[in-house]
Every structure is written in C-alpha cells, then in structure tokens.
Length: 338
Image 1: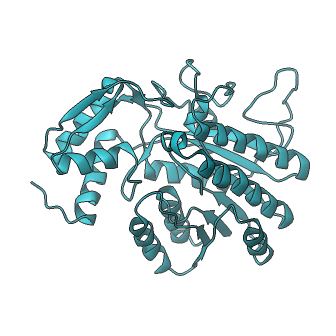
Image 2 (image 1 turned 90 degrees about the vertical axis):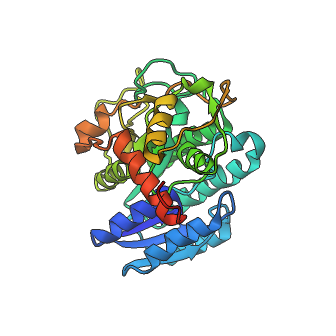
C-alpha cells in the first residue's frame, strides 16, 4: 500500500514508518520538524528512514492549508495515518495557540485532503488524556469523555468528533487510536522516562508529581506499532446495531471506530522510577511534588475492543521496556555503563 504518515520524524511516526517499510509498504512521511524539542533527534530518526527504499519525505506544516491542499492534489494514498500533533499536557497550559493551529486547523486540512483524494482509510492519533475526570477504570472506549482536563485533551476529543463528522458526511472510513503513555527507544525528550534518565545520569534531582502515587499504563513502542498496523489493515464499517437512543461513542452508523492502545497493566510512577534506577545502577534524587494542573491520577486501558477485533495483546513488561530504553539512551548519547 501507499501510506501517508504525518509526524514521521516523531517518536511513534518514526517507529511506525520503519515497520511499514519493513513489510514492503510505500511510505510518504510528512513533518514540520518544529523545535518543540531537540530537532536533531527528529533529523536522526529521519536519516534512518531516508536510507530505506520506499520512503519519501516532505517538510510541511499541517496548519498550512494551501500547501496541504496542493500536497494531497499530487498524491493518492491508500491509508493516511495522522500522528502529527502538538503534544504535551503541561505545554498546552503555556502555549494554547500551538494546539489550535496544529491539532485543530491541521487536522481539518488532513480531513479535507482525505475527502478530496478518496483515501480508503484514515487512522488518527487520539490520547488517553480524553478520559479526563472519568473515575471508572479501566477506561473504556464506550464511556463518555466530555470532561477533559487540558486543552491538549480537548483538541484530541475534538479530533474524534471531527473525524466522525467526515465519516458520516463523506463516507470516509476513520479509526481513532487512544494511546496510553508510550515509551521506548527514540522517545520524546519531554516525556517522563527521558527526563528522569537524563537527570539521574547528570546527578540532578527528578520531579516526582503526586509524590509518585500516580498510576500510568506505560506502553512500549513496539506494542503500540503492532496495534497500529493491525488497525490500519482493518477498515471500519458501520455498526448495524448502533442506536441513537443509547449512542455508543466507540462506533457509529458511519464507518467509524475508536480503540484504546495500552498495556492494560498500570503501575505506580514510583515503581517505574525504581525500575529505571535498577537499570541505570543509580539512585535518583527525588523532589516529591503535588499533582500538577492537567494531570490525572490514573490511566488504565480497557483493551477488550482491540483484542476482539484484531487480536491485539501487549507483551512487553516495564522491566524489559525500560531496560531497552536505557540501552538505547546510553548508546545514542555515548554514555558508558557504570
């Protein structure tokens, strides 16, 4: 297939593109290479992809409507996987306009591109953050998610609504994926594991929010990629049992579907840190802090829907995944083992 991956220089986009190329797909990567975090990391990810046959890269900003319309007019894609977005819960408190331009305006341009070029399947990244104030766990795609706690979460919820509208109006098969705390090699420097590793190796204290009592469904990148690839090959169809009397948020009379992709095994942040300390062979200095605005105490993915539909089952433990990240980090930054 010919597949567009937006955010191809990003963490998940890079790993997904590599896996798609390995199975023989043609991949067109798109990214604006913004400086939200270290651009050289994005460029080094891209360098690995550009060495592989079947990969083409375009530097474009999703929010640039004329450029995106022109781009889609010159390509016909079987599948579009939209992973490009302004990420980060806490950053959305500081720079809200970045989220509107990328996550709302940019996603509109993706939807319009899919509409006008008859894309067969749009797969897009949502987030576990949409569950917001929900307290019933594990979080199910069948639950209402109308109480987000950050603008980032609100934009992801908006993406789900926008995608459903285009699926209903224009028959575009769309699948939304709610990712849960993704980590692994080549990860984002603003994420907890990267921040903790960098600080611990430098002998600096780490900030531990909610005194380490938060629980996260940390999901290793290989499991995320496996789930995405299973889903992009399964084009959604209308749910014949869907009823407006009891509307199911996860499906529709339109060809629309939502899935969680997580590990289904949330762990306390403090245990996650203990595993990291063990892998590094260094005890962390900890600043114990209260919960931050926009954060949630727990995220926990119900995977029943994804398991039933595509047979997905995560199989990477925290202990194995953190070790792989630490090994990559030491090699990438040329830090010898102690």
